[in-house]
Image (cartoon, rainbow, N blue to C red; front, top):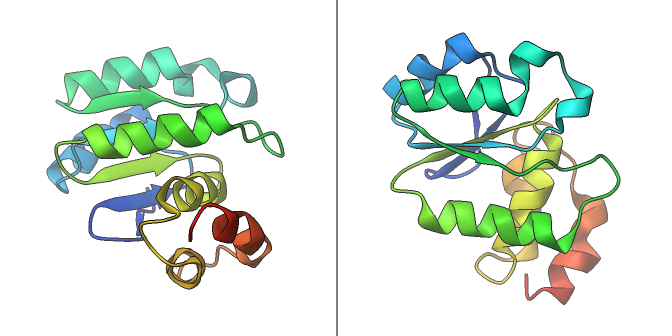
Length: 140
């Protein structure tokens, strides 16, 4: 498990395993967002298994699969809604953490500047410079 905090209330991670969820809860996270489509991963990491383990650990689980290169407005809206409805810090995961950073940046455009939305993920090696025009168009 490799949690990479972007803000005090939102972190990203590469793929997690069901056995990581109690430690995620112990670290103070209240919501886990799965940004990975089931078609990419083995059955024991798919959404149903992860949801069961997350709920058993006392976490809220949100399934919001982002297909690489095919991010949709519905993905952005679902991410924003999950973040807004969370009762505490959120951990979102995908294969590397990059998609979870991109969808977060788009969801937060207008609440932080484009510079901040690019710089925060960059601390963890995620290069979102290419996203600047979209962030600016969304009010970032």
